[in-house]
Image 1 (tube, rainbow, N blue to C red):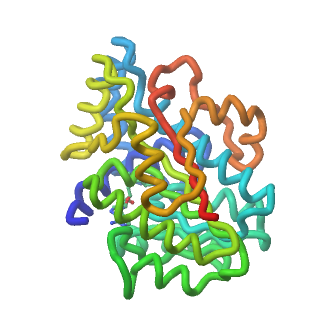
Image 2: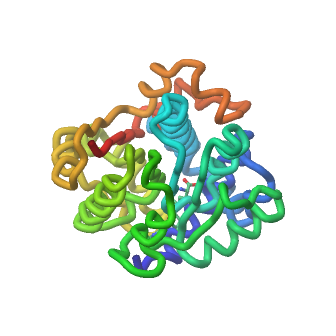
Length: 291
Ligand SMILES: C[S@@+](CC[C@H](N)C(=O)[O-])C[C@H]1O[C@@H](n2cnc3c(N)ncnc32)[C@H](O)[C@@H]1O
Protein backbone atom coordinates (compact mmCIF):
# COMPACT_ATOMS: atom_id res chain seq x y z
CA UNK A 1 0.00 0.00 0.00
CA UNK A 2 1.44 3.32 -1.00
CA UNK A 3 -0.13 4.98 2.00
CA UNK A 4 2.31 3.85 4.66
CA UNK A 5 2.94 7.43 5.70
CA UNK A 6 -0.76 8.10 5.80
CA UNK A 7 -1.63 5.12 7.94
CA UNK A 8 1.22 5.47 10.39
CA UNK A 9 -0.25 8.44 12.32
CA UNK A 10 -3.24 6.31 13.15
CA UNK A 11 -0.97 3.64 14.62
CA UNK A 12 0.48 6.30 16.93
CA UNK A 13 -3.00 7.47 17.86
CA UNK A 14 -4.35 4.02 18.65
CA UNK A 15 -1.12 3.14 20.47
CA UNK A 16 -1.73 6.13 22.71
CA UNK A 17 -5.38 5.19 23.27
CA UNK A 18 -4.43 1.66 24.38
CA UNK A 19 -1.82 3.10 26.74
CA UNK A 20 -4.00 5.79 28.27
CA UNK A 21 -6.63 3.14 29.02
CA UNK A 22 -4.25 0.91 30.92
CA UNK A 23 -4.02 -1.73 28.17
CA UNK A 24 -0.40 -1.18 27.16
CA UNK A 25 3.18 -0.53 28.21
CA UNK A 26 4.77 2.97 28.24
CA UNK A 27 7.30 1.73 25.65
CA UNK A 28 4.45 1.42 23.13
CA UNK A 29 3.19 4.96 23.75
CA UNK A 30 4.61 7.75 21.54
CA UNK A 31 4.77 11.52 21.64
CA UNK A 32 3.20 11.57 18.16
CA UNK A 33 0.25 9.61 19.56
CA UNK A 34 -0.24 11.99 22.45
CA UNK A 35 -0.07 15.07 20.18
CA UNK A 36 -2.61 13.57 17.76
CA UNK A 37 -4.91 12.61 20.59
CA UNK A 38 -4.83 16.11 22.04
CA UNK A 39 -5.35 17.62 18.57
CA UNK A 40 -8.50 15.58 18.07
CA UNK A 41 -9.89 16.22 21.54
CA UNK A 42 -12.06 19.20 20.51
CA UNK A 43 -13.68 17.64 17.39
CA UNK A 44 -14.25 14.47 19.39
CA UNK A 45 -15.97 16.41 22.16
CA UNK A 46 -18.16 18.12 19.56
CA UNK A 47 -18.98 14.75 17.98
CA UNK A 48 -19.85 13.31 21.39
CA UNK A 49 -22.06 16.31 22.19
CA UNK A 50 -23.89 15.84 18.88
CA UNK A 51 -24.57 12.24 19.81
CA UNK A 52 -22.01 10.79 17.40
CA UNK A 53 -19.82 9.21 20.04
CA UNK A 54 -16.08 9.28 20.45
CA UNK A 55 -13.37 7.60 18.45
CA UNK A 56 -11.87 6.37 21.72
CA UNK A 57 -15.01 4.41 22.64
CA UNK A 58 -15.15 3.00 19.12
CA UNK A 59 -11.52 1.88 19.30
CA UNK A 60 -11.75 0.41 22.80
CA UNK A 61 -14.89 -1.54 21.98
CA UNK A 62 -13.43 -3.10 18.83
CA UNK A 63 -10.10 -3.82 20.54
CA UNK A 64 -11.72 -5.55 23.50
CA UNK A 65 -14.07 -7.54 21.26
CA UNK A 66 -11.14 -8.85 19.19
CA UNK A 67 -9.37 -9.73 22.45
CA UNK A 68 -12.44 -11.64 23.64
CA UNK A 69 -12.80 -13.69 20.44
CA UNK A 70 -9.09 -14.48 20.29
CA UNK A 71 -9.05 -15.46 23.95
CA UNK A 72 -11.97 -17.80 23.39
CA UNK A 73 -10.28 -19.43 20.37
CA UNK A 74 -7.16 -20.07 22.47
CA UNK A 75 -9.02 -21.24 25.59
CA UNK A 76 -11.07 -23.67 23.52
CA UNK A 77 -7.86 -25.16 22.12
CA UNK A 78 -8.48 -24.14 18.50
CA UNK A 79 -5.50 -21.79 18.30
CA UNK A 80 -1.92 -21.92 19.58
CA UNK A 81 -0.39 -19.53 17.03
CA UNK A 82 -1.34 -15.97 16.14
CA UNK A 83 -0.21 -13.72 13.31
CA UNK A 84 -1.38 -10.16 13.86
CA UNK A 85 -1.05 -8.40 10.50
CA UNK A 86 -0.67 -4.58 10.70
CA UNK A 87 -0.12 -4.88 14.45
CA UNK A 88 1.27 -1.34 14.71
CA UNK A 89 1.85 -0.32 18.32
CA UNK A 90 -0.91 -2.56 19.62
CA UNK A 91 -0.15 -4.20 22.98
CA UNK A 92 -2.24 -7.32 22.22
CA UNK A 93 0.80 -9.50 21.49
CA UNK A 94 2.41 -8.41 24.73
CA UNK A 95 -0.69 -9.08 26.83
CA UNK A 96 -1.45 -12.43 25.24
CA UNK A 97 2.11 -13.76 25.44
CA UNK A 98 2.28 -12.69 29.09
CA UNK A 99 -0.93 -14.52 29.79
CA UNK A 100 -0.35 -17.71 27.83
CA UNK A 101 3.46 -18.02 28.03
CA UNK A 102 4.83 -21.10 26.26
CA UNK A 103 1.37 -22.21 25.20
CA UNK A 104 1.20 -19.52 22.50
CA UNK A 105 3.34 -18.30 19.59
CA UNK A 106 2.50 -14.70 18.68
CA UNK A 107 3.96 -13.07 15.57
CA UNK A 108 3.36 -9.36 15.14
CA UNK A 109 3.64 -8.26 11.52
CA UNK A 110 3.74 -4.86 9.87
CA UNK A 111 5.60 -2.77 7.28
CA UNK A 112 9.38 -2.28 7.75
CA UNK A 113 9.41 1.07 9.57
CA UNK A 114 6.88 -0.10 12.13
CA UNK A 115 8.64 -3.46 12.52
CA UNK A 116 11.85 -1.69 13.53
CA UNK A 117 10.03 0.50 16.03
CA UNK A 118 7.94 -2.30 17.52
CA UNK A 119 10.82 -4.73 17.76
CA UNK A 120 12.93 -2.14 19.60
CA UNK A 121 10.09 -1.39 22.02
CA UNK A 122 9.46 -5.08 22.77
CA UNK A 123 13.20 -5.61 23.17
CA UNK A 124 13.30 -2.86 25.81
CA UNK A 125 10.29 -4.42 27.53
CA UNK A 126 12.07 -7.78 27.46
CA UNK A 127 9.28 -9.64 25.68
CA UNK A 128 10.98 -10.78 22.46
CA UNK A 129 11.57 -14.51 22.03
CA UNK A 130 10.95 -17.28 19.50
CA UNK A 131 7.39 -17.28 20.74
CA UNK A 132 6.88 -13.54 20.52
CA UNK A 133 8.41 -11.99 17.43
CA UNK A 134 7.96 -9.06 15.10
CA UNK A 135 8.27 -9.73 11.37
CA UNK A 136 7.82 -7.82 8.15
CA UNK A 137 4.65 -8.67 6.25
CA UNK A 138 2.99 -6.57 3.59
CA UNK A 139 -0.66 -7.65 3.64
CA UNK A 140 -0.91 -6.86 -0.08
CA UNK A 141 1.99 -9.06 -1.14
CA UNK A 142 1.05 -12.36 -2.77
CA UNK A 143 4.27 -14.28 -2.30
CA UNK A 144 7.98 -14.05 -1.65
CA UNK A 145 9.81 -12.08 1.04
CA UNK A 146 7.56 -10.17 3.46
CA UNK A 147 4.48 -12.08 2.31
CA UNK A 148 2.10 -13.78 4.73
CA UNK A 149 2.62 -17.09 2.93
CA UNK A 150 6.35 -17.03 3.57
CA UNK A 151 5.86 -16.24 7.25
CA UNK A 152 3.17 -18.91 7.67
CA UNK A 153 5.41 -21.56 6.08
CA UNK A 154 7.65 -21.20 9.14
CA UNK A 155 4.79 -21.94 11.57
CA UNK A 156 3.44 -25.34 12.69
CA UNK A 157 0.73 -26.42 10.25
CA UNK A 158 -0.24 -29.29 12.60
CA UNK A 159 -1.55 -26.69 15.05
CA UNK A 160 -4.20 -23.97 14.87
CA UNK A 161 -3.54 -20.45 13.59
CA UNK A 162 -5.43 -17.18 14.06
CA UNK A 163 -4.86 -14.20 11.79
CA UNK A 164 -5.86 -10.85 13.28
CA UNK A 165 -6.20 -7.48 11.60
CA UNK A 166 -7.32 -4.39 13.45
CA UNK A 167 -7.60 -0.96 11.87
CA UNK A 168 -6.26 -2.08 8.48
CA UNK A 169 -9.19 -2.92 6.18
CA UNK A 170 -10.67 0.58 6.20
CA UNK A 171 -7.62 1.95 4.42
CA UNK A 172 -7.57 -0.65 1.65
CA UNK A 173 -9.40 -0.47 -1.67
CA UNK A 174 -12.30 -2.95 -1.91
CA UNK A 175 -10.50 -5.21 -4.39
CA UNK A 176 -7.48 -5.29 -2.10
CA UNK A 177 -9.72 -6.33 0.80
CA UNK A 178 -11.08 -9.21 -1.28
CA UNK A 179 -7.60 -10.28 -2.39
CA UNK A 180 -6.29 -9.99 1.17
CA UNK A 181 -9.13 -12.17 2.49
CA UNK A 182 -8.45 -14.77 -0.22
CA UNK A 183 -4.78 -14.81 0.79
CA UNK A 184 -5.74 -15.17 4.47
CA UNK A 185 -8.17 -18.04 3.75
CA UNK A 186 -5.58 -19.86 1.63
CA UNK A 187 -2.97 -19.50 4.34
CA UNK A 188 -5.30 -20.53 7.18
CA UNK A 189 -6.52 -23.52 5.16
CA UNK A 190 -3.06 -25.06 5.44
CA UNK A 191 -3.35 -25.27 9.24
CA UNK A 192 -5.12 -27.79 11.42
CA UNK A 193 -7.55 -25.01 12.30
CA UNK A 194 -7.75 -21.48 10.91
CA UNK A 195 -9.58 -18.45 12.29
CA UNK A 196 -9.61 -14.88 11.04
CA UNK A 197 -10.71 -12.07 13.38
CA UNK A 198 -10.93 -8.42 12.34
CA UNK A 199 -12.84 -5.20 12.69
CA UNK A 200 -14.84 -3.99 9.67
CA UNK A 201 -16.69 -0.80 8.73
CA UNK A 202 -20.26 -1.54 7.72
CA UNK A 203 -22.55 0.96 5.99
CA UNK A 204 -25.78 -0.17 7.57
CA UNK A 205 -26.04 2.73 9.98
CA UNK A 206 -25.89 5.73 7.73
CA UNK A 207 -27.42 8.41 9.91
CA UNK A 208 -26.02 11.93 10.11
CA UNK A 209 -23.90 11.24 13.17
CA UNK A 210 -22.30 8.17 11.64
CA UNK A 211 -21.48 10.04 8.46
CA UNK A 212 -19.97 12.87 10.50
CA UNK A 213 -17.96 10.35 12.44
CA UNK A 214 -16.58 8.82 9.24
CA UNK A 215 -15.68 12.27 7.92
CA UNK A 216 -13.72 12.85 11.11
CA UNK A 217 -12.00 9.50 10.72
CA UNK A 218 -11.14 10.30 7.09
CA UNK A 219 -9.74 13.71 7.98
CA UNK A 220 -7.72 12.02 10.66
CA UNK A 221 -6.02 9.63 8.25
CA UNK A 222 -5.79 12.34 5.59
CA UNK A 223 -7.51 10.14 3.06
CA UNK A 224 -10.72 8.35 2.49
CA UNK A 225 -11.83 5.72 4.95
CA UNK A 226 -13.42 3.14 2.70
CA UNK A 227 -16.85 1.77 3.39
CA UNK A 228 -16.67 -1.44 1.41
CA UNK A 229 -19.82 -3.23 2.36
CA UNK A 230 -23.28 -1.89 3.00
CA UNK A 231 -24.76 -4.90 4.74
CA UNK A 232 -23.86 -7.93 6.78
CA UNK A 233 -24.88 -10.20 3.87
CA UNK A 234 -22.39 -8.49 1.55
CA UNK A 235 -19.59 -9.06 4.05
CA UNK A 236 -20.56 -12.69 4.59
CA UNK A 237 -20.78 -13.24 0.82
CA UNK A 238 -17.33 -11.75 0.23
CA UNK A 239 -15.81 -13.85 3.02
CA UNK A 240 -17.34 -17.04 1.62
CA UNK A 241 -16.13 -16.15 -1.86
CA UNK A 242 -12.66 -15.68 -0.38
CA UNK A 243 -12.76 -19.26 0.93
CA UNK A 244 -14.04 -19.00 4.52
CA UNK A 245 -16.56 -21.65 5.50
CA UNK A 246 -18.42 -20.17 8.46
CA UNK A 247 -18.11 -16.39 8.55
CA UNK A 248 -19.92 -14.24 11.11
CA UNK A 249 -20.27 -10.47 11.57
CA UNK A 250 -21.25 -9.08 14.93
CA UNK A 251 -21.40 -5.78 16.66
CA UNK A 252 -18.31 -5.46 18.85
CA UNK A 253 -20.49 -4.29 21.74
CA UNK A 254 -22.58 -7.45 21.60
CA UNK A 255 -19.46 -9.64 21.48
CA UNK A 256 -18.41 -7.99 24.73
CA UNK A 257 -21.86 -8.26 26.22
CA UNK A 258 -22.07 -11.98 25.44
CA UNK A 259 -18.60 -12.53 26.73
CA UNK A 260 -19.30 -10.79 30.02
CA UNK A 261 -16.33 -10.87 32.31
CA UNK A 262 -14.47 -13.44 30.21
CA UNK A 263 -12.65 -10.67 28.32
CA UNK A 264 -11.17 -9.08 31.40
CA UNK A 265 -8.36 -11.47 32.41
CA UNK A 266 -6.35 -11.52 29.16
CA UNK A 267 -6.86 -7.87 28.39
CA UNK A 268 -5.69 -7.03 31.89
CA UNK A 269 -7.21 -3.60 31.58
CA UNK A 270 -8.44 -1.24 34.20
CA UNK A 271 -10.83 0.66 31.94
CA UNK A 272 -13.73 -1.07 30.22
CA UNK A 273 -15.07 0.66 27.08
CA UNK A 274 -17.67 3.28 28.02
CA UNK A 275 -20.94 1.45 27.33
CA UNK A 276 -23.10 4.58 26.98
CA UNK A 277 -20.96 6.14 24.22
CA UNK A 278 -22.54 5.65 20.75
CA UNK A 279 -19.03 5.43 19.26
CA UNK A 280 -18.78 1.94 20.74
CA UNK A 281 -21.90 0.78 18.91
CA UNK A 282 -20.44 1.52 15.46
CA UNK A 283 -17.74 -1.13 15.59
CA UNK A 284 -18.33 -4.48 13.88
CA UNK A 285 -16.19 -7.57 14.09
CA UNK A 286 -15.68 -10.45 11.65
CA UNK A 287 -14.91 -13.97 12.78
CA UNK A 288 -14.36 -16.49 10.00
CA UNK A 289 -12.91 -19.98 9.93
CA UNK A 290 -11.54 -22.33 7.34
CA UNK A 291 -12.87 -25.88 7.44
C1 LIG B 1 -4.46 2.13 12.14
S1 LIG B 1 -2.93 1.34 12.37
C2 LIG B 1 -3.49 0.05 13.41
C3 LIG B 1 -2.42 -0.52 14.24
C4 LIG B 1 -2.89 -1.57 15.27
N1 LIG B 1 -3.52 -2.68 14.63
C5 LIG B 1 -3.82 -0.96 16.28
O1 LIG B 1 -5.03 -1.21 16.21
O2 LIG B 1 -3.34 -0.22 17.15
C6 LIG B 1 -2.63 0.60 10.83
C7 LIG B 1 -1.35 -0.23 10.73
O3 LIG B 1 -1.36 -0.87 9.45
C8 LIG B 1 -0.04 -0.94 8.98
N2 LIG B 1 -0.12 -1.19 7.52
C9 LIG B 1 -0.53 -0.35 6.56
N3 LIG B 1 -0.48 -0.95 5.36
C10 LIG B 1 -0.06 -2.22 5.56
C11 LIG B 1 0.20 -3.34 4.72
N4 LIG B 1 0.02 -3.26 3.39
N5 LIG B 1 0.67 -4.48 5.27
C12 LIG B 1 0.86 -4.56 6.61
N6 LIG B 1 0.63 -3.54 7.47
C13 LIG B 1 0.19 -2.38 6.95
C14 LIG B 1 0.54 0.40 9.37
O4 LIG B 1 1.96 0.39 9.34
C15 LIG B 1 -0.06 0.57 10.77
O5 LIG B 1 0.79 0.04 11.75
